[in-house]
Structures are given as C-alpha cells and as structure tokens.
Length: 359
Image 1 (cartoon, one colour):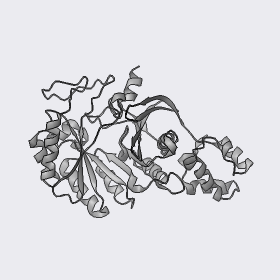
Image 2 (cartoon, helix red, strand yellow):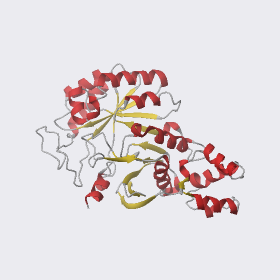
Image 3 (cartoon, helix red, strand yellow):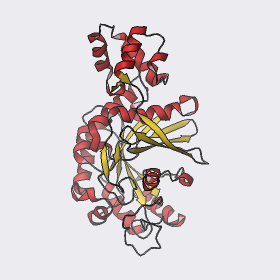
C-alpha cells in the first residue's frame, strides 16, 4: 500500500483520472485529510462508495504510531513517534498566546554531529519521506486545541536541507490553501549551513523563513562545535547568505547558542558583530544552551567549566547573557533572546528519542 500523502494534488488527480474518476475528488480528499483530519477513507462521506473502497485498498493515510507523549507545565507537548520500520522521530507543539508552533523532524537521526545537539548522538538512520513529514504536522494539528496549528518550524531531528526534495514537497502541501493553508512566512527551515541547499532554496520563490545555526564566529571554534564548518567555512557561508538576501530580499535568522566559557564573552560578541555587520537583513537569535541528558554519551567540549553531565556544557549566567545581547544591539545587530520552552520534559530535539533508544 502507498502513503497517499506522498502524492501532490496533481499526482492524485492523475491517479483518479486513470481510474475514471473526476479529478475534483482529489481536492475533496485533500480537504478531508489536511483540513478535517480524517484518517480513514470510509469517513469521506462526499466521495462515491466505489472510490472509497479503491482508496482503502490502495492507500493508507497515517504511517506512524505514538510511542510517548510528554506535556510541560508551560503547555509544550512533545511527541515521540514510531515509524513503520521502527525508527523513532520527535515533534513538538509549542503554544504562545494565539500562536501554536509545530516543530517537526526531517530525518531519523542526523549525520552532521553538531556537538550542542542531541539529534545526532545515535547517528543517522535515514531521510523521512514527504508523507512522514506530513504525518508529523497532521498529528500535531489534530492534537492541538481547535486544530489551530499556525506555524511550522523544521527544527526537530535531522538537517532539512540534507533531505531537500522531501522537505520542499511537504512544505508545498503545508502552504497550500487546499491543504494546511499555513502561510509561507509562518514556515521556517533551520539548517546547519548546507550551502548547496541554501542556493537551491533561494530559487524556489517561496517566502519561507530561513534560520542558520551559527554558534561561533571563527572557523576554529565553529568547526569544533559544528563539523559541517570544515566543508562549508564561514567565509563561504556568509557569502552565500549575502547572495540569498540579495536574491530573495528575505531576512536570515542566525541561531547562536551561548555556552559558558566557550562562546559567550565580550570577545565572542565582538567577533559575531563583525561577522554579520555587512549582512543587510540579518537577525541573531540567542539561546542559552539546553542541557543534553537522557544518556547522551558523546565526549564534551573541553572548556574548563563545571560540566553538565554527558556533553560537559553549561549555560552562562543571566548577566553574561544580557551583556552579550547588549553588545550586539549597540553594534547595530538585530538581536533577540529565545525563551526556552519545555525544559521540564527535555524538549530539546533528540532527547526523548535518546531516552527510548537507550531503554
């Protein structure tokens, strides 16, 4: 059987025409799945009975099972899903007033081994299909109050631009008015800095948001934190960002995780300001490092600080964070400080999966 969500609207129309059914039924099917949250073809009451039977024989709608669910005191809900091949992925619902952001994964595991992230600690398993990505979004939507998912961020497990075609195919469904109908500007791709993917993205004519994990303003330190920097060093990455901004006229957000004794002092702030000063549309999103727990085993960064277990990293104190932010602000850099959500349920990507894979 085939996952029906693997089909675009045009592909589904063609399937129906080949079976001698009018193609307008494709929009009805999309409406039932993506807007009404139907997981059974038998419930699609405005479709001919014969078509419902054919669909049930040839396709399925939902291809994952809930393996665990944790809810935070702040309203954040973290879902662990088991795929048909028993791989595990995570997704998170993050409420904030009238906004509900779904954070979804693009791969099972991750091959890029960023040392501030738990996603790659067990290595890379495989890419998710576009249907599996849409499974996550559907589950989050159907398990939210009033099914009111307003934003999608590809900030879960995996590198979205390393699974480019499936991610973009899913995004077009998420954005489509006949499916999820989530505006492009409410969809964010977060990347560790895959230059070929960024170059492809700038030609898509989609007004989606781009976020780049930076975490350091020198090649030496960034290569230690993020091995991908050895292949795509900062000079090349910043040049690519300049081209992206010129081509799309879209702002790029740079994620910068602050680690005590590593990249959070005034010297690091000065280097970051100097690195980004020539970018016309750039924003820095500061994040105090989140402790990676649940049995992570990778060697930590040796920085002389009292370590958090496993990764040997700890966040700066509030005064140092405020000073770093103020330095960027005075340098004319657009800067924000992200408020961490779901810390009581280990909501950082990869942590719930690590706990279950260890058990």
